Image 1 (cartoon, rainbow, N blue to C red):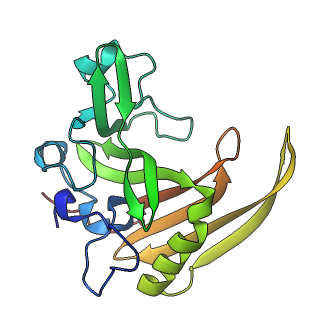
Image 2 (image 1 turned 30 degrees about the horizontal axis):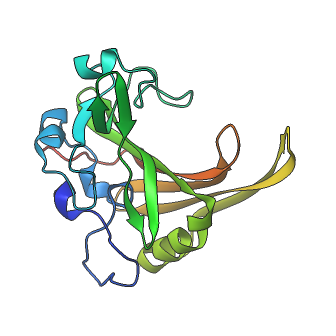
Length: 198
């Protein structure tokens, strides 16, 4: 399934076999960087956006670079995503996630030239829709844990949930970030799973 067919316009419109947002689609894992770059833009992405990687010359002068690695990104991974560049301004594209919610900071992490991980951020308000969607595909989470975070704004409850899907793990962390104002969804191959060879 190509990325152009991989975005969900609405949870209500979802039917068995319907395409899903990239962060929910393990068939993308293992894709080569060249294959990813050649995919047409998916519906709902700003038409000015283009596939780009953190090291691309067009982003070298961008301040800030929307694809700069986060602390948790593996240091040897190449971070890529959809970006609109306007001179020195580069903006990461928002893409449809589920229902009325958009995914921001959609990032494709390539390890040794192959797609190893997809992650994105979304509003904490998307939690119920995302968990209902994943439960409908794969049943209840394989793992769930609750923690208490101590931040400058006080103590916050944080939940981490994981679903196993087609040799991959989808992890949801809510809330996350320096201000704990968003949730993160992360898709990565499970240990020992085979990779897509496209």
